[in-house]
Structure formats: structure tokens, C-alpha cells
Image (cartoon, rainbow, N blue to C red; front, side):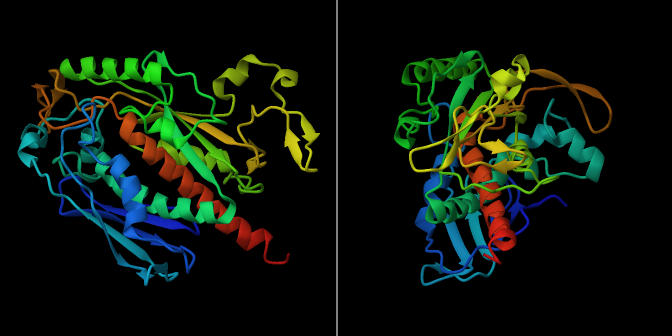
Length: 363
């Protein structure tokens, strides 16, 4: 039913926005990985609501609880279950949405498909579902770090027409976490925050772009033809709430180049390894990672739930006016950064296990 992601490293999320708990079951995690709730909590704290003046005012600590799959601090190789209890309920804020569909939200499509829906905060279509993804991503990142010191770093590249200047090959985690918006260009970050504050005051929302760089990526990840690495990365980030676009490497700018301008020429580095002089491919060629930095970008639309009055219809097919009262992010980007990190980690971890199973068994 679309609630499970991955083939060997399999992640199933569960729970609704205003239900008792949300969480994840992770199947296929290798045994003997040292993991704790503290490791997972670090990423959940970056994703949680109420963390700054430019995010939703919902107050959730999102404390995680591991209830299976780990013993004496080590993974067992059995399914890992992680729970997070919802605390800050305000279902009354959504009474009007019981019968009125929010424009550009999932209300109408869920209703027309399932003939029923959880209208309190959006149910499964709420970004609270991503708690499970981020928790699983924390484990995937630890596997990747231990295997090849793989580093996954995402940051806000653009908010509306404000675009940061960032060198993805040199940016650090500390620079990203130095402000509310998670943009390492400090000057542009201040402008972004000011713009979001103005948008929030007007009961509106705004979107933008998150860029992600993977450093120390192993060579050989990806399964042509239908499971190319960039195809799985695209599916992963495009499954996130509010995502609307995907680019890798040169992206759409590559359409303005000739082949001779775009091709990444090869050379032998000082250690005898094959490298590319440029990286317009974004670290993936023929659907397989080549060891260069993987660089992707994901576009996120403005949050659908806003406080402004909008025209809509009801479940009884009557035209109406809706002014949403629910708590929402004026811009999803700051909290979407750890979500992108997580989804990229899940894809790479899954492909790492598949590469090991297929290509290393006879070597």
C-alpha cells in the first residue's frame, strides 16, 4: 500500500498526525551495529516542530523509544521498531476541514480514493509521517559512516527568489546549523528568515530548494536499468510532503550545453585512481555511482495549509470559503533538510547492501 520503502534495507512507517503514536519498522539492518536512542534523537530534534520562530508552533519533543531489534546497544539483525508519541493535540483546529477540502492539499484526493480520511491535521499525508523516515535515516547514516565514512549534508539553497552561494564540496554541518533556516550562506540566510517572517505574518506560505551533497560515496551503487541510483534518489525525495521537483548534477542547466561542454572528462589522480575533472553528472553515470560527490536538488512548494481565506468545496459538493486554523510551517524547508538527509541515506544504504550481496559474494 505504499508504506514501505527499500528492498534489502526496508523501512515501513506508520501512524497519523493526531493519532497516539507515529513510528517506523526497519527490516534488514545488519547485526552488531552500535546504535542508541541518542543517535536517533539528534536527527529527530532537527526535524521536530516548534524549534524556531519560522516553523509551526506545534510543541512536540518527539522523543523516540526503541522497542525491538536492539539488545545491549547493538542491532540484532531483527526488525527494529521505533515509536514517537504525539503529545500536543489540537484536533479542534481542524473541525472545519472535516467537510471542507484544503486547496492543493491531500484532502480531496484521499477522500476520492479511499472514501474516508483522517481530517485531523491530514492524517498520513501530514509531515509527521516523516518522523519514521528520519529515525530510520539516522541508522542508515551510521551504517554508511562506518562503511566508508560517507557524509550526507543537505541545506537550504533557495527560498523563493533568494539564492545562496554555496560550495557543496566544502560546506560543513556547523555552518548549516548556524541559523534557523539551515542555509550556510549567512548573509542570504538572514534575508531568507526575514522573508519567511513576513510571509508568516500575512498568513501565507513560501517554498524553495534544498541541495544535498554526498561525500565519500562508494563506487558501484545503483542497479540499471529500472533501479538506477538517481531514479531511486528521485523517488525517495519526491515522496516527501510538498516536494515538486528533482535535479541531479547540472540538472536542467545541462540542457543549455553541448555534449563537449557537459561531458566529465577522466584523468588519473596522484594515487592512481580514475577521477573526473568536472562533476556535471552529479556523481552518477549510467545509473551507477562513480565515487565523485553526489549532488542533488529538491524543489518544495509553499505549504498548502495557510490562514488566508480560499475558495473550496465541501464533501457535499457545495462551494465554500475556507480559512485554515491549523498550525503549519510558513516554509517547510528548515525542517525538510533532515528529511532529505534521511531519504538519501535510506537509498544509499539499501543500494550498499544490494551491491555487497551481488558483487562481493564471489570476490
